[in-house]
Amino acid sequence: MTQPKLGVLALQGAFREHRQRLEALGVTVKEVRLPADLHGLSGLILPGGESTTMARLMTDYALWRPVRDFYSRGGAIWGTCAGAILLARDIQGAPPQFGVQDSLSLMDIRVRRNAFGRQVDSFTAPLTVTGLKNPFPAVFIRAPVIESVGEGVEPLAQHEGQVVLARQGRLMASSFHPELTPDPRLHELFLALVDQTVLTGV
Ligand SMILES: NC(=O)CC[C@H](N)C(=O)O
Image (cartoon, rainbow, N blue to C red):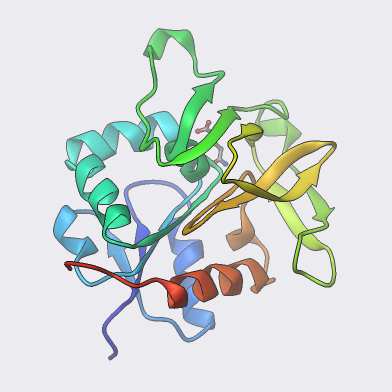
């Protein structure tokens, strides 16, 4: 078995589906629950799920600092749906009773939670993605939108005029769930990003 280069944060949410997508591409995957699980990885996926719950578990498992350090050392991170919320510098639309929502604050984006409506408003839409020839079938489930992006952030796809996929160097954020469709192209895109990463001081 080869040493895994890719990890999926496995505290809550759709981590198994990401794992399956990556394994179908021949990639060995590490499920990340503890800081030590990050050792030796060059890419990490933060899955969709429920971002408040995931943030709480990140605190319980003391993962905030190790994930930030992983990025500082040169690791690539892709946040999908709730995972994109965890990456964002600014989170809007969190239920007020929970106070200010913790985030990694690594990506210069402002996200708005549940921007397309409630669970019943889940939908699939064909997305035109920069760099992909044909539309990508994107599954949105109580999805956030990326309301604004900083200078270093490149929007890669929009839905109804709102940014739903963006990249900032080694960081990617998508509002939707690419692991819930058999289309592997966004996982391939992230793998290409991971292949370019040069880790320092690991
Ligand atoms: N599918 C998802 O990941 C939904 C995200 C969820 N609405 C949140 O704000 O955390």
